[in-house]
Image 1: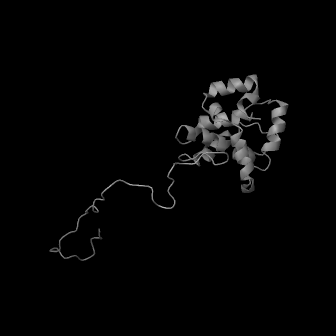
Image 2: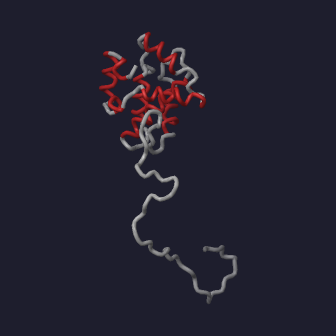
Length: 172
């Protein structure tokens, strides 16, 4: 271990170097209690694990002035749309990027200055108090409204589908 210059040392003492631990024979196996043998489980409300998902919250701050929220609170819109964005990012096995959030906000009409009244009513119902940690089930339901097939499409296609009929992007 390194020591400061003022610490007295014996110049005749042999300096110890690094040595690797002994080699383990055989390959690694998932035999610990917390290891998942079959991989990450999938299903309703189990989420989409991916790297650096918290970065989506940082990116969401870039949309503060661009969102048309109506009666939906900013925190509720972010709480519902960032999991959709992280789901899209996890599908591709990467961290969220700005386009994931743009798509999530666009699907729910938050980037539209004049969204359809039916969508506005739906948003007010499903995004109400979504930022509260007590509403995990409701937040998961919002994420499950957007299918993987929709999220695999390019941004231009999703926006075009929204312009034709916003319901095409949602399972409502």
